Image (tube, rainbow, N blue to C red; front, top):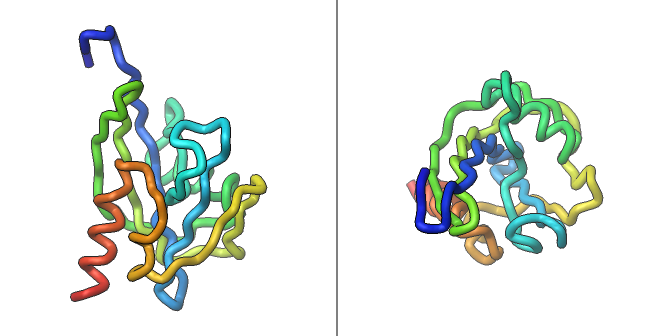
Length: 139
């Protein structure tokens, strides 16, 4: 994509909305050196060359949260321009997994009831995820 500032990086990101049996959602806080530092996020990461989104998600969630994905379904796809980079978030809802989710890289993490998600400071690209989860919870 061309802009006045030149070419902008577009990054495809696999994102997991991990839901436990109680219906709570697992979130992590980004580190100081990361883009959108100290904001809360749904875990995931960049899709590497040769990986499918489900493969990237399984790898990233194992690395970041220590879980093994048993089942996930497409949830939504978001394109967002942060100014310094553009992201395409391919979001999957993870409804079955093995292991106990935790901040495996030392990052703060927690299970949050869906009605409370809006109280957390997420990157702008994550706002539609929170909105969709909360709208579905009200149905």
